[in-house]
Amino acid sequence: MLAWALVLQLLQLHADAPLELWNYEDPMAWKTYFPLCDGPLQSPIDVVPTPSSRGPETERVKVDFAPGLQNGEIKGMNTGRNIKLFFRPENLTAPLMQLSFPSKPTFGTYRFLEMVFHWGEGQGDHGSEHTIDGKFFDAEAQMVFASNKYDTYEEARKHPGGLVIVAVPLNGAWNLPATHPMFPTFEIDLILEELAAINSTIHINADLTPMMVMMQTALARYYSYYGSLTEPPCNPVVLWLVSSTEMLLEQEFIIQLYAEIFQDETFNIKLIRNRRPIQLSKGRLVTENISPP
Image 1 (cartoon, one colour):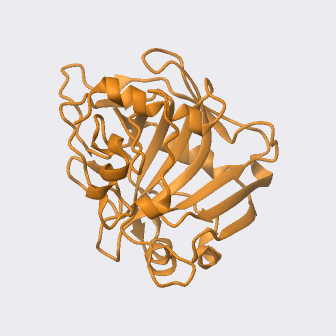
Image 2: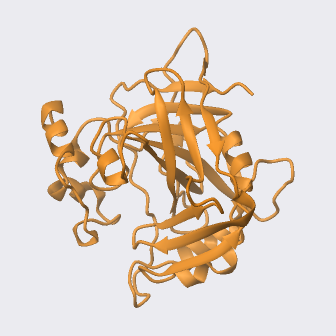
């Protein structure tokens, strides 16, 4: 295990993670090229609240959305390791949304960068990275935010607390009950096959207002802990907010992810099980939080 002094030095280095140096078939090998993957505060973990006689904390996380959500745009990309979605409101001068933490220790504002999906190998195989009290889920969506202290994602990931990631556990369903929280997919399933090959992209116009309800639901009750990126270079700079609310989405969407997405250009290597195994929490504080309405 790396000492913190060495961790802080490594964070300041330019640490890209070329795809040829890592994959999800052998996560234990990541530390060979990316020593921070064998360092402290690694993610994901099994989320179990640290016992407290006070019960859940009240955390006032404020979510501000840009104007122009009704006439937004979504760009999707197959990176060879996951599917990333980038959201742009009609007002291009502002990020889609920002998280504000009015009190310490997380004091500051974080701007939304991208959404990433993780999934399994087939029906019945879990795809979530985090577990909640030992329970896996079909998939996991992660919303990545960078601190406004830093101009770029590359700079933010060099500093502890530079990133906030909101993780939402997802389960598929064939018939979506109207009373259960739903995760918006913006009809991307209709063109998801266009992301089959690595480096392929899609671009659609979409009403982005469902993101408001989704985020309000995700952050109504959540767990927080300090951890790392769940892919190389595994920088331990992330405040994780793991929603305790499981959301549903069409089972067909999850099937498409593990059936139609590939790691290469020739459709020979499927992109499946793109989730890092659970890491030891090593006594880390996990706080259960409730956002007041």
